Image (tube, rainbow, N blue to C red; front, side):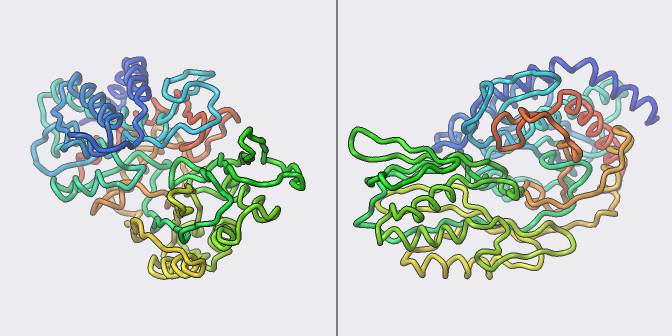
Length: 469
């Protein structure tokens, strides 16, 4: 196909569909698709299932073939000449809204050229773009009377944020794409991902504690911006502290609330962990019992750095940014304090060593280690044809030459045999202070960048279809 014709068609298509794209994004953002208890046909809860159904209805309106993948990972498809699949994998589940929003989180807000709402960047905005990519090629095939060389499948995941069971279910039950990209990171291309692991450190059973409630964090893969503890204590000698507020309750208890600075677990360097703020306060003013103290001291050590240096696991290599280590959720339940841990590590560290360090830390307090998921780092050749097609398409549409990346984030890419992360975050974003990042309050993305990204995806998919995959 003549590329000048293709680019003209792309520009016209994007211009003609701007408002429809925003309406469909609004419909998806309005669904609070955080994980809940499983229900029939909804392994990750009813709200996530509702988001999947909403996306599939959009795809059906576009005259695409659809399937729901038993509620794990649905898809919309345009069948090509070959049954080989070119996959575009986005997800519909989101992290909880959390505090600090200046607008309704589950309502798409347009403000000064920005789109605000939970999921506009991660990953409902990109998911809508993937559907409109498939629609573009359906219309193009009808116009030209030709089939695509490969089957184009838009994968719509439902459990990316809380374990990725959706994609593991898909890859164990359905065909693997010959090449796949996920629009769930930063342009131009992320060609590698750090290893990752999650675990929960659990205190021994506390029979004589002073803490009545202890809660912080909303997602294991985010540094918590808020946390609180309620306890029996004489607060007479407690001094005010920045980011800590105290409330005396009628039942004789006090409540301490910490306000930190949230961030995604993969970029915690400038965050302030609200759980760590509370633990420091409790220990400094001796507001915990002797049974609680060892575990809280262990948490203090764990949370006093975000690069793992405080517990001896810091690491770096030539491909990735340094190791990150955060505590995401804490809760007091049935006499046990439970602290989640999220660690992203480069090739010079191993999950086995990290696990041994964490296990030793918690067992020294009399507590236990609960193993979560583990994934190894992965890298693909940045000079391979599919990667270079994506890079060059980005450069031509944006007029920019940005460096290729590896990522600390865990995305769908590492679950496929041949995959990359491809956008849609701007690597040079300079947003107003009222626009939040992924996983943060006021999550946002520029309206024009959304439409520019769609042009990049359309051009890249057209070129990928011409490769020998």
